[in-house]
Length: 91
Image (cartoon, rainbow, N blue to C red):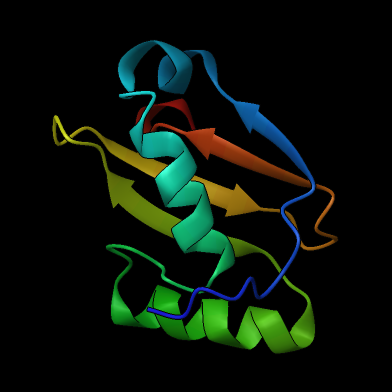
């Protein structure tokens, strides 16, 4: 995995569900993976869209699971002003 950040995260936000359900040790690691271009468990189409987003400056979307297998998403806005950690059911 590349360890060089590919974009800025902006302000960091966790939704109430993410704050309450995710293992707090897994969030920083996943945020680092996200900003370094490791899209986690995204499907191929979303991974390609993310690679293009780095060039075109559009939204970046990654999928991860914490150590208890809780699925969560990390979304960075197109203008890179903020990144949100959110559970799929909160979207």
